Amino acid sequence: MQGISPRWLLKVLPFVEAKGGAYRVNRRLSYAVGDGLLTFTSVGSEIRVVPQELCELPLLRGFDDEAALTAIANRFEQREYAPGDVIAEIGGRADQIVLIAHGKVSQLGRGEYGDDVALGVLADGQYFGEQVLAGQDSEWAFTARALTHTTVLTMSRSTFDQLNGQVQPLREHIALQVSSPAQAQNKHGEAEIKLAAGHTGEPLLPGTFVDYELRPREYELSVAQTIVRVHTRVADLYSQPMDQVEHQLKLTIQALRERQEFELVNNKDFGLLHNADLKQRIHTRSGPPTPDDMDELISRRRKTKYILAHPKAIAAIGREASKRGLYPQLADVNGTQVPSWRGIPILPCDKLQITDQGTTSIIAMRTGEENQGVIGLHQTGIPDEYEPGLNVRFMGIDEHAVLKYLVSTYYSAAILVPDALGVLEHVEIGR
Image 1 (cartoon, helix red, strand yellow):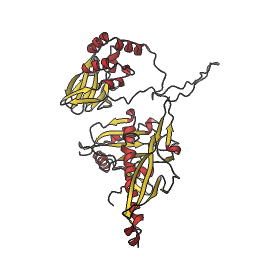
Image 2 (cartoon, one colour; image 1 turned 30 degrees about the horizontal axis):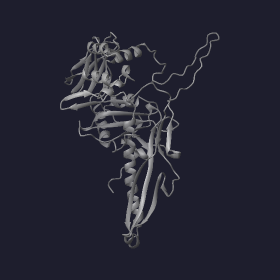
Image 3 (cartoon, one colour; image 1 turned 135 degrees about the vertical axis):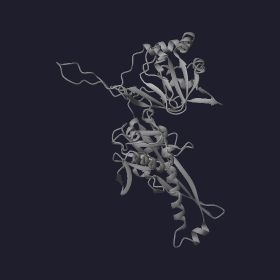
Image 4 (cartoon, helix red, strand yellow; image 1 turned 90 degrees about the horizontal axis):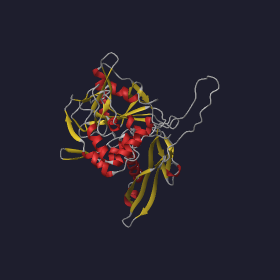
């Protein structure tokens, strides 16, 4: 069977019991709402922002007047930029909000010695200049330059001020947001725990409590199932020297485990790629996975345990390292030698798919409950268990003398805190 892969994710992911078929993750209360990304629609070459998605902008969160949101969306103007074009210049007047519909934009600041400093990369669905909505007079703190062909939607401050003056609900909402005191929070956006440190006299100690999310997420176990059919004649006559039913089940289980790993990576509900926090998603600086990009990826969390990448992405990492005269060392994982980066094993995973444009993603993760990392979920001790979390149940013999077995595996994955998982996106592997 050629479809069997190493399935490193299933091997290294610590699996935790999900009794009752569910696992609850209680996180500290975070003031971030939504995924922070805007969604766009297109008709031909015309691109529009979905009005309801404008609520992802900080000052418009909680604003539910659809007519006003539609009016705002209709006032955005579409602009195209070629690679290298400057969208905003550092020190210039910040007089527009910019929504990135498609493409990649670099943010360049000014270093202490006057040279350019890379601050980050923005891509599809992200934005900058949102302070314009509050009517603040400010300057651009960075230069925004298109890295690829980029399509943006822009709206000037004067246009928004005009709308704000005409739509009373919008005016009231903006005024309330501007006047409301900022919630006390840490650098990760979590509700602050008040503490006192140092000693001068006998100060009054602050009282505090750990504020949790009001609606903690519960991960329910998913299932992959199939029915194995074997004719009784085959089972009776051809089970020597090899048990035909046993081998049919063996290959079926291999296929189910492959699908299990695919779902753990790509499922839109609990898959790692779709559940990575927005702040943990970064973009390559130039396309290929350079050493700079890999360093940025692993620096976003403590105790990065493993890196997962498509085999072709691993080859691209090697090419980029070789260009700089770097030769990554090997690491031992369960007795197997694999490439590593800064001592962190890079494990091949063909479930990280390659797009038609020749790009893929690379995942870095911390694992285990004790480290508040990424964990797998399953339940053992289920009826007719064949392997942990997988059972084989005899369904009987039908009128065609065919034996039937129901094979099921139950699984899910949970990210205990947002910084346990990071994703390097838009990785080009063809250069």
